[in-house]
Image 1 (cartoon, helix red, strand yellow):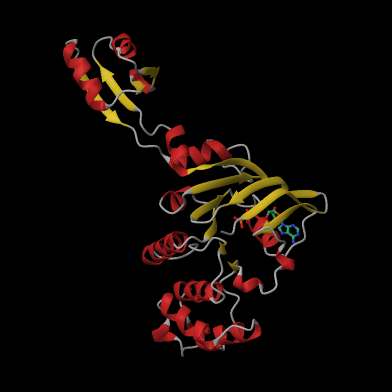
Image 2 (cartoon, helix red, strand yellow):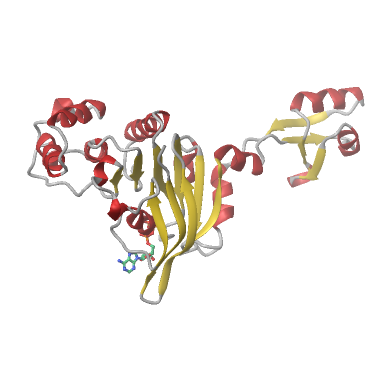
Length: 302
Ligand SMILES: Nc1ncnc2c1ncn2[C@@H]1O[C@H](COP(=O)(O)OP(=O)(O)OP(=O)(O)O)[C@@H](O)[C@H]1O
C-alpha cells in the first residue's frame, strides 16, 4: 500500500515562506481533502510532491521514495494540476497515446482509461473543442494511464456544473475504494464534505488541522441537541448525564443525550418544550473558524 508522506516541508519564494514546516500523510484507500483559503500554499505543496518545485527544506516521499527517484513516475503517481494543459489541436486519443508512448505504456491502457472516464465516444475529437468538464475527464484519464496507487488533483471541480461536480466526486470515491491514496485540493469545505474521508487544512502555509471527517463533524456540534423550554430544565438534563451549555437566545445546547431522551425527560418533569432540534455540524462554519486567522483578504465588516 502506497502513501504520501510530507515531513517538515517548507518552500520559500524570496522573502515569502509559502509552505511552512508542513507534515501530514495521505493514506491509501481514502480521499484526503486538502483545504485552505486562496494562497494558502496547496498548489505549491502539490508541486513539491510531484517534483515540479524543489522544497527549501523538508522531504516528501511517495511509497518511501522521492518523486525524482521513481523509475516510471506515471505508474506510481497520477497528478492533475491544470486541466487546460492539453494540446488543443490533438484528439483526446492522440493526447493520451502520446503520453502513454513517452512513458513506455501500452496502447491498450489508452482505450481502458477512455472507457473508464466515459470519453470513448469523443476520443476522435480535438481536445481544443472540449467543454471544461470533458477537459477535466481527459486530464483524469491521463492520470490513470499508468494505473498508479497515488492520485493528486488540484481543485478538480473548479468551474464545473453540478453534474460535472457529482461525476468527479463519485470518481474520487471509486478510486479510493480501489485502495488508492487520493489527495484532492479545494478552497471550499462544502465540496469536501461529501467527498473526503480525511482532511488536511492549511492556512498561510501552515498546518491548521489534520483529522478524520467524522471527527471534525463531531467536534463541531454534530450529535448535540438544541433545546428551548419554558421552564428551567438544565439541572434535570445534567442529572440525567447530559452536558449542557447556553446557546443563543436562551436555548440550551445539550450533548450526551438524544433528542428522544430529552423529550421524555421534559415530559416526565412536566416541562413544556418549544424546540428540540438535533444539530447538524456546519462544516463551512467549522472551516471558516479554523482558517479565520489566515485568509489573505478579509471583507471589511460594515
Ligand atoms: N513561483 C512562485 N513564485 C513566487 N511566489 C509564488 C510562486 N508560486 C506561488 N507563489 C505564492 O505562494 C503563495 C501560495 O500559492 P499557492 O498557489 O500554492 O496557493 P493555493 O493554496 O494553491 O491557492 P489557490 O487556491 O489560490 O490556488 C501565494 O501567495 C502565491 O502568490
